[in-house]
Length: 244
Image (tube, rainbow, N blue to C red; front, side):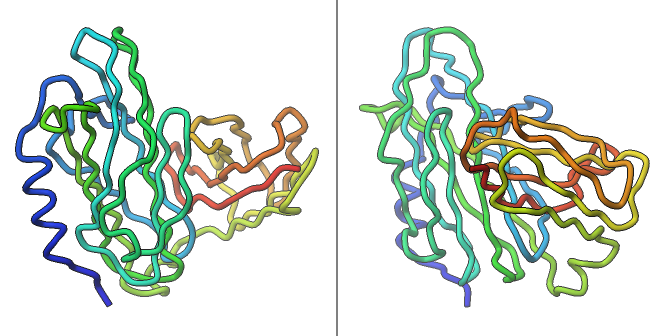
């Protein structure tokens, strides 16, 4: 069942009518301006998918920035959450917080340093289109705001999702000093990529055989996410890895 509420439309109309000049939203990969635009990504029917964006403070002054997340069109049974440059917030079930406000502001310096925000969708085996609007605003002046719509497209069936998908398994999980990675149909440019909670890549290991051992003793204890990249393109959903 899809969750569509009229109050979301009303709230968005009130909150993001005026786009300010202090905050610019950029795509992570090519740094193109997506303010008032849309970023989309296909994801498998199981697991976790991330859309990364960059924020730029163009005001010339130090700026405290807050943000809101609106569920525009979500599938029941899915989850979503997000990370600012220094904080990650917990998973939210679809429909429980249709309009969610980050409880903390992030203080942008006056320079032009770009800051990473990671936006997550967890499909939990539910197919369909899930769209959200993220509005970033200057604290104390909500009219000074910019927004971006993010869309996660999940295939209509499990059969479509797993077609041509390589089988990736990682164990043990939780892990300590080493992980074992098994992959069917290993290609010449298959890599296991591990990122931290803020979306920063902390390990990139080439997979050259069906089963590989990877040393992770250099990583601190905590929660990470891993995924498969084939020929430089992410070819599996991100999944959670716990290091003790």
